[in-house]
Length: 132
Image (cartoon, rainbow, N blue to C red; front, side, top):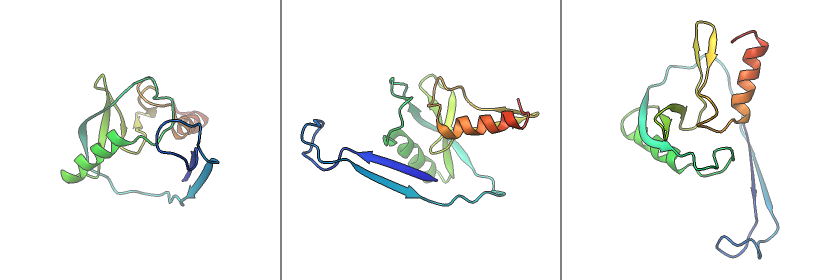
């Protein structure tokens, strides 16, 4: 897993970028271990993902996801499924959602979620393997 964070750098508090310092680039890398995973227990969160016109942007605004994960933790679940404003299940709190049924790989349409790198990569790999 690689996380890349680019900030406007140090500067005065507020939204103006006029007096921002030089940008800061932060890179974090963690190994990913693939293999058989134990099943997890999930609940359906009451917190919704908002389609406010910025869903296509990758940002660090995970507030609804954090609230949903806290909700799951407090109820004794491993994670929570999150819904769109329209009530469709679209993702986990920090994961994409895929379902394999009858040789068909399904995922929520990108209308309600960001069409991110991982989602696109998994779908491309599935097509390359001849999956629908």
